[in-house]
Amino acid sequence: MGGGCAAKYSAARLQKLLEGFVPVEAENLLVGLAPADDAAVYKLDDERALVFTLDFFPPLVDDPAAFGRIAATNALNDVFAMGGSPLLALSIAAFPEELPDETLAAVFAAADEQVRAAGALLAGGHTIRDVEPKYGLAVVGTVHPNGVWAKSTARPGDALFLTKPLGTGLVLAGKGDTNEAVTWMTTLNKEAADVVRAFAPNAVTDVTGFGLFGHAHEMADRSGVRIVIDALPPLAGALELARDGVRTGGDRRNREFAPVEADGAPEEVLALGYDAQTAGGLLVSLPAEKALSLQSEFERRGLFLARVGRVEAGTGLALAWAG
Image 1 (cartoon, rainbow, N blue to C red):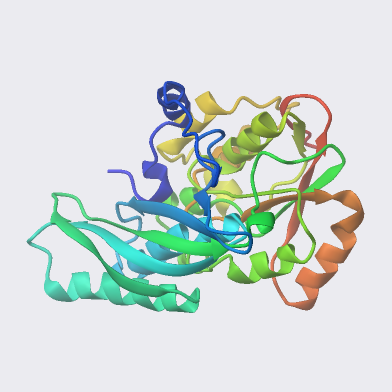
Image 2 (cartoon, rainbow, N blue to C red):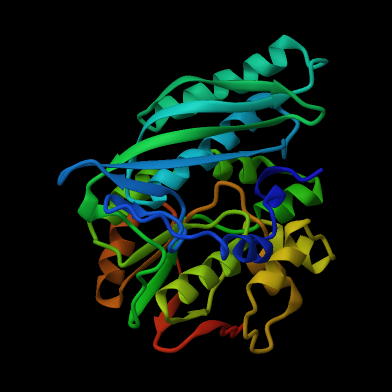
């Protein structure tokens, strides 16, 4: 009914629901719900903190191995978005009993391969019966307490970068050639995070179900800054599909959550910015004087990187579109 991160609950409704929660008062809870981020972080001692996250969703592709790999990537990437390294994972699974054993085995095996590629171990999990298949992971990672990346610490004068192109939701909804989209959705953010770590970014988040605009809105709002997006790198065919009227279920919910000053941008560009991504790239905010060095290092390693905007004093989210 809603595949991948397009299955996410409305961000606006979640925000309202969580307003009633009293923040946990714990000295060692470095990241919890005040404010919420991509994962929780708990300090063990002066050198170690645990990063904990979970993510699961219904299938967004027909191939069971691809589904398992995408779901695992999406969950593992939350740990990388916090500056951490995955350590241990547990499966969260719900499958109809009618599915053949080999189908479920393909999901689990592909997820295990991806967890190992991230440097972690898949050590168990929990499986229930359900009418609609769902799969994901609970992941524990580690990070130095002083090396935690938050989405709430962007600073005026920062440059904004994105480490994957946009449009996975549009391309999948278009039901054409999805090979490029699947390749990106099964690309761990590990290598990108390893490069970014050396540049001491001010703020980082990963772009998933709320789209680029939704996650940029969160970064701007929680950092108390204004973010201006001036470029959106599309997957091949994504803009054309948006121009033809293709949309995903997350589009309307994301528009309700993240208002943007559009500055005359065409509708297909707005659709790309609001498109729900699955296992998307890192959105990185770092001092502008580090921008050229960051770009050079990504280019040297053969990794994708696009400069997508800037951080200013003020509030809100704007799209400065020059065409």
